[in-house]
Image (cartoon, rainbow, N blue to C red):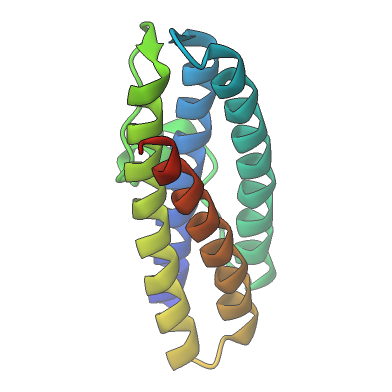
Length: 145
């Protein structure tokens, strides 16, 4: 179980960094597609805030401690922060695709580990995230065509 908690905390860290990154993009988006991208970014980071709370509470319900400060999140995140500078919608979309692929890979890893340990609650939670990330990836990739 400990390995899965470690993976859940890494996932939590990536969600936290991704949420801040999406907020950053929301403030700094520029160029064609501004209005749509600006609105979609807000939708994405609000949704991820809910996922963060769900993951942290899930870790607590298992009797473990979720990471809960920015220093720990940054040290345990594979996703990198955004710069404080204007960025075009197209670049944002490309970056979000890369980061969602990272989250999806982590969710798969957590699900596989959970299945191996008969941790069905964690496994089911990851099913929901995988479906969500797959749909977002499909939609964002369609924007690049």
